[in-house]
Image (cartoon, rainbow, N blue to C red; front, side, top):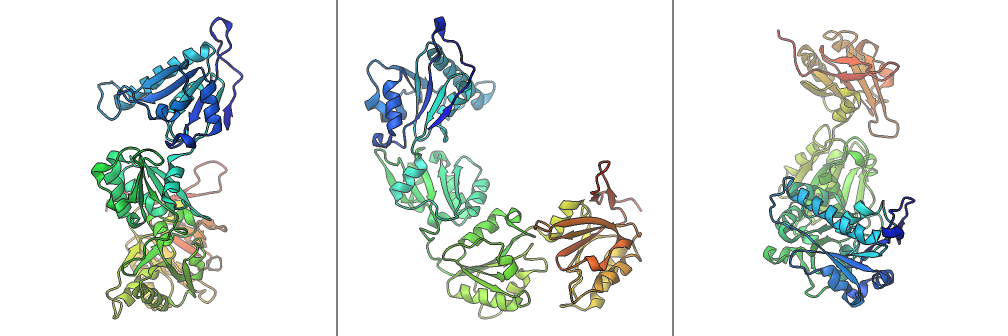
Length: 513
């Protein structure tokens, strides 16, 4: 039980001690699911308050009816509007705020008279409940106790007989009133979900489940534990038949695996430069729903281990073999996620997969590429905005192309006065490219041109420094470093006195010739 106590109490009328406010959770609808504490509070209260629409019928009162005495004072709190329009100067929200303030004043009058007031609430009082508006207006003035109740979320899972979440799975609870694109993103990213407040929002929720690929997993529960209860696969529900008191449930993937796909597929997922904070919702969902993960060991280690999901790790130098493995698995009906660092289309796995997928016997295998935050963008954000104008992206690795090509591209980008993001600048076996690149760039750039040296951005050993181009030290650069070279217009300043960090940006305006 949750209690709030305050030292400042409102004085009751004629010296009477103020009464006590109760927010009473009644559970999802079946009166037998009320807690013993809820029954005790209702039975002993002086005033029973409950919200209702203008027709006067209250679901909350009907749940608690057997415990309401003839001598109870009843305080129906009747909404002036529900979903219709209003001529209130502050619109729908303004009309409701005025109603809540007036309703709280009515309850305060009882409390000031020394009466105990029990405000009835379906489900749990502080979970999408009307009681919370009374709580926010009264709990700082009167002694208050909140009686928790069984939520519709728990009731729906119980009626379906399907676990909501297991082990390290994440459960997301969403209001169906969110925009469809927001619902889609959140459904794609989570392991399990419950969408509340269906009714008129059902078409939008159905679309979001479809767009996120979660529709085959989704169940529908209407009036859980109440008369008229109904459950069904959500895909089979007629939108015209859906009331407000219904929820969509996407249960645990571990306990209730999604239906097997009709055909296998491959999705190439960009995980960003490091860690879950850099992962897009769509990519997170693709990784969670895959039957198999294929990738370089370092990148696979960033993805949480999920029961029942196969992981195929390999060395960083076998990209074509990884692509063939992923496509072979997909041909056998597996949902395969190829895990790539950064963005998979930038010096990463998307090209390797598509090259192999263009050949027989893989041409019929569906392949999608999901974008990720690039190393260049992540490093630029840490430094400020060094890539704020036109820029070129060049890899200094000569493993897959000759150095002469790299040198020509460096000269071309430098002579065009482009800022540059230099990937793969050096390694233990490649130690001379950075020095040679610095030499070529100094033919076109001032010695004090800002260079951002960013290493392990987003990781535990992150380091971001700004040095002049002439002072760029090759021995301080490795494969985990990316270099951002400024243009002739790039600026670098220390914004605060005593701050050793430099902020770098390239203006969007370019001087006229």
